[in-house]
Length: 163
Image (tube, rainbow, N blue to C red; front, top):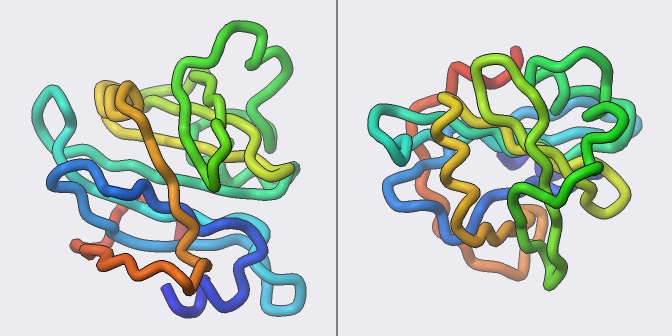
């Protein structure tokens, strides 16, 4: 976590408070030491609202990076044309602003995308029913903000993170 936070150019986001019984299970980024991290991923694991285990990846990235789309199982680097043609399916809150999220067709998972601070915000959840977590208000915090005192609970590493 410390390595990612040191060079992250994009927010490193966690829902706060975490949903009941959910744990942070890893971090990843895309970029390099020269230009910084252009995409960040926070992995979480916990109970699927309808039963069984669930996994959740929260991706913040610059346009064109493609990490979120890849994790969602989509072709291309971004959500695609027309994904905002209907009303949003979910809403996140970040730094006092609403962030509308739209469901994007993703194979075998729930995936939502929206715009955050000029970049993309992705929520990718397994199984698809874990997407029900986004029915409740979702408040996001940036772990790069050193002024907050979050006692983040950690769990076993997520198998959903990219290598």
